[in-house]
Image (cartoon, rainbow over the protein chains, first blue to last red):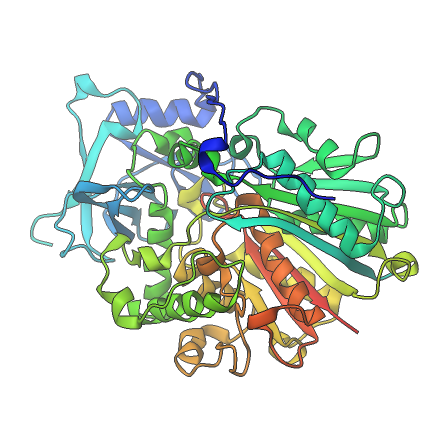
Length: 154
Length: 383
C-alpha cells in the first residue's frame, strides 16, 4: 500500500493559511506588574528565593516557594554573549548586534539585552550598565532599557 | 517485562516534501512501520501516541488530526506536546503497566510549510523578553555556546570539528540531506550566523514522518524477528524553560537527569563501557560536546577526546554515526525519533553506508530545541 504521488512541483497545489494569533493580551501577573512599575522608575527587580537571588523577578522560585521581590542594583557584568549577524532565513542584518546575558555577582540568571559595544570588544566579565529611555517614554517593558553599555574606565 | 521496538517506518527526510500533506506523510510512515513489524493497526495495536505541537502543524487543536492517518480511530490515542522520544517514554510506561501490549509512537514535521518559522520560534519566548525583537531567536544557542566554551575550555576549532565530523559522515546516509564535504578551514573561515556558530554548525530543517511500533516481550515474537529493546528511557525539563534567563548557561541539567534516569532503568553505571555508540543532540555544533559531557560519555574533557578522534565512526566510541542532526536536519518534534530510528537501524544491521561493526547497545539523547530546556534519553539494545 502506498500513495500515488505527483513529482512536479507545479502540480502541487498549496493552500495559504494564517495562524490567528496576531492579537493576544498577556497578563503580566503579580511579579510582572511590580517589574513593570520598577522599570518605569528606572529600577530592575530580582527575586530572593531562600539564600539565592534570581534575575529577572518572577512570583515563584525554582524550589517552588514564593519569592521575595527585591531591587537589583548591580554592578552588572556580561556573563555570556553572542553576536547576531543573520536572521533564521539567512538574511544578513545591516549591522551585527551584540546580545548578552547581563548579571551581577552572586545572582542566578540575569537580563538578556543588547549591549552597545563593538563586537570585537565584547567579552565575558565586561562591566556594563543599563541605559534607560527618558522617563516619559517608559512603558513598563524590558525595552524601557534601550541597551546596556560598557562602564567608562572599566 | 521488557519493551521491544518491533517495527519502524518513515517517509521524507528531505528539506521539502511537496507531494504529500503532513497527514499523508503520517499515513505513509505508518504503513511502512506496520509492514516492517507485521502488525495490523486495526487489530493488533492497543494504543497510539503522537508527539506534536499546534504551531508546527498550522492548525489549532491538532491532536484531533492524529488518530486517522495512523489507524488510531476508536482506540486510545494520546497526543503529547513534546519531542518524539518523550512519546517513547510514555509508550514504554504503558507497555510496562501491562494494560497495553502493542503501542505505536508517531511524530512528524513539515517545517517547509511554515512560512514564518522564525516568528513561531519568537512566539515561544516569554513575552517579557520578546519585546526586544532580537533578530534571530537562535541567539540563545549563541549565549549557551559561548558560556560552554568559557567553562569547558573548548575552542571554536572544537565546535568546527563536530561540524566536519557529522556533515562529512552524513554523505554516506541517504536520510542526511544536509550532509556536505566540508573542511575545518571552510567552517572556521565562514562568517558566523550567531556567534560563534557558522551556518555549518546550525542544523537545517527537514520534512519527515516517523512511526515506531513497540510491543511487550510476551507478544513481541508474534511481530517479526528484528527486535530492538528499550532498556530504559527518561526525560526532564530544567529550570530556565519559560524564564530562559534562569537557565544554567553552558550546561544542560535536563540532559544529565534524563540520562541518569534512563541508565538506572537500563542498569548502566559506566555508559562508555556498557554501550557501543550514541546518537546525541547536535542541532548546534557545541550541543554534541555539551550533551556528551552531560551524558557522562567523556567527563569534562570531551573536546580533547574529540581531537583524538575518539568519537569518530572508527574511534573508541562512535558518536552520531548517522551524521546527526547537522546532516539529517532538525525534524521539529520528530527529532528524537529520527535519532532513535538511526540507532535502531544500526542495531538491526540495516544502516547501509553508515553501518558500524559489532554494535549491541546504544544511547539516544534528544533535546526539544530552543527555547526549551527539555531533554530525553533512551538506552536501546539487541540480544
